[in-house]
Amino acid sequence: MNLLAETPADEFDAQLGTARSTVMAGGHTHVQMVRQHRSTLVVNPGSVGSPFEEVFSGRPPVILGHAEYATISARAGEIDVTLHRVALDGRAFERTVTAGRAR
Image (cartoon, rainbow, N blue to C red; front, side):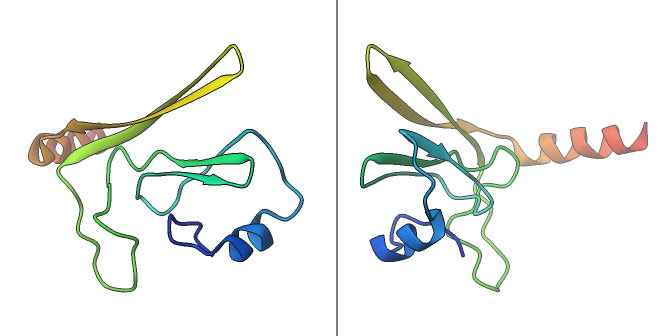
């Protein structure tokens, strides 16, 4: 099951089981998210190569025209999570990937 911004708290509890941490990061959905769940910040940094407009639901995903990532910092007991989006030239990215495969 995917853990999403709209996932009910009881489903989060079931998926996380006894795991506890100040910050937990995961991926797979290709969709950025920061969510407070009880005492844990749950982070999905998104996707650098294929960020989706929404969670894949059986039909072809809409891939956005930017790269996504997150930075997390901790200082003096404070946690800062920043989601980033950087413009990406999809055609140039595809050429780079294709050239890399040809080597």
